[in-house]
Structure formats: structure tokens, C-alpha cells
Image (cartoon, rainbow, N blue to C red; front, side, top):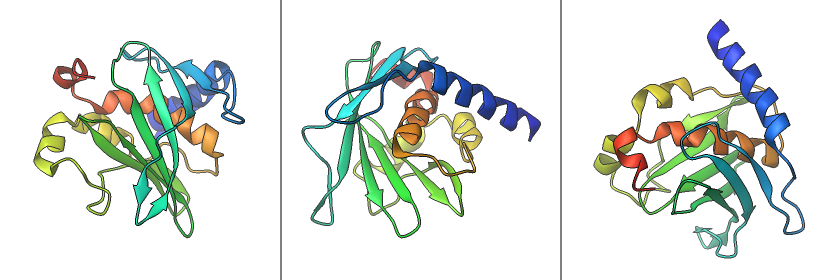
Length: 163
């Protein structure tokens, strides 16, 4: 538990240092993922995700050392927000549950990539470490920054080259 708290404190501090701008009025949010993917940029997407005939608030997440952008769709739930994080190769979701924000395997209602394929690509150690990322309310921009920093660790090394 202490290790998780220390990791969270470090990530929160780095996030506050590394985030240069908030996503508003077409501006980008940038930072360093502290991973092989390198620096990231998050912008409002010009091609939004659609779920149940509703257009979702959608963002493009680009890393300097990857060729395929990651899209993040935000689903407003009754008590929280669910972030669908995907590209052509990988999909996962980050969500809140009783005030806890963390990663979760993609629910069937959002799934586009076969479950077996995702199981091969998912780094299970990082997945279980990210089940709880924070336990207090954060803004959408803060949560997007956390996703940008944590997401690269979810991809098994042998598949990260295809990003």
C-alpha cells in the first residue's frame, strides 16, 4: 500500500510539472509519459467516437515515439466518467467505482477487438498495478493526463513496436 501511495504521489507531482496546458478552445495538453512512448500531446478529436447513437467527447492522444494515435472517448455515467482508450491494435477502459479511478478490461458494450487478442497484448502486471490510480475527484484534464502516463505500461513489450 505504501508503494502505491508513493507511486501515486510521484505521478501526481510529475503530472503537475509535465502538463503544459489544459485542453480548451482547441489548445493541446502536453507532457512526458516517462515511458518508451515518450512525450504526449492530447487534443480534441475531429472524429468523435459514437456510443448508443450519442457522440462522445473524444480526444486524440499522440506519443512522440509511436505512429498510431490513441483515441479516448468519454462516457458520462450516472456517478462517474468512463474513458474508452483505443487504437487499431489495443483497447482498454479507465473508470471510477465508488470514488476510485483505475483501469478495467473493456466492457463488452464497448468492445471492438476480440477478447483473446487483447489478453495477449495486455501486460497483466501493469494492469493489476493500475486497478487503483487515484481515490479522489479529478478534472477530466487531470484524468486524461494520468491515462497518458499510465497507458503505455499496459501494452506488452512485444506489441508496443506496432504502435
